[in-house]
Image (tube, rainbow, N blue to C red):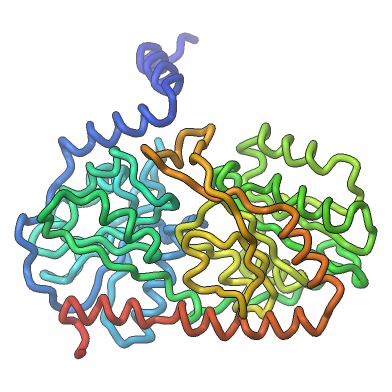
Length: 412
């Protein structure tokens, strides 16, 4: 039987054959021509806050939206949740969207290039008569030109960190009325709660010191820099059986070449384990709680949710001393690894911008920190407690409260 619409299938194959960067840029430009735009002058805010995002998806922006809703409840701010699903999925489940009350500001947890597409899939009346706030996540110190398309659809921008706020502010034209505010996800207001799973449930030995590296291959293999973690573990411990490196890898099946590179890098090390199952959040937190150390030799972070959650669980963290993670860790609350700045080159073409740099962590220094922590249980406990206090102080709801107060929705 002949396939239906062969011309459309051919068009789709040709579209997918284009490089990812130009493809995304073309999609943004096309959808921006059709998407509904908010009022030029933002109306006064009233009635609370509407939060739209990937509420049903295990994504970073989805988690930021869920954390915002939880914190708004804690602040006593009326709120409405709008689940928009995956804005780029070819087939999306139709969701019944109930319009928020008039004048209630709308916070869209969708990055700038996809914001027009997300708005196209929502009722056109949604942005009319209300202030629209873009909540954006970005991990480099400069912005790609493709992000400018989102500026026409927001009155202000909230971002994950001061690091990202500086990058976004540099993109705005002189005299722009768009305000940029750092509103980190209030991770500490809803700290991770592990399930009852223990080491034995994950096949991990009780007597070993376990270093956990947890990341998603969908978040850029180059940026997360897991090969550096394997190199640091090798330099610190060699093949020592009581020093385990546990690589928690999400979306391994979607990026087989990247996963194969990880396995190749660990070849010859019997003390490197891989966990690629998709875990429920509570089980994922339980896995983190099983670790003695969490290692993040990232090249750049817009926030750094994994180390933040580890610190809230009292697990000591070793991390690159650059980008947004430095906003909730210092020399007293984590072990910070030196680096050199190098041009940001992402083979997938996602995390690239003109003149952008990111960090190349010092492997030998990371290995030194791993050895010191592995050898001293008291140091691990003390550093873990200091980390918990630091994140509790830095990633509570103070920034969100400030944003809500600036909208006039809470008394100053």
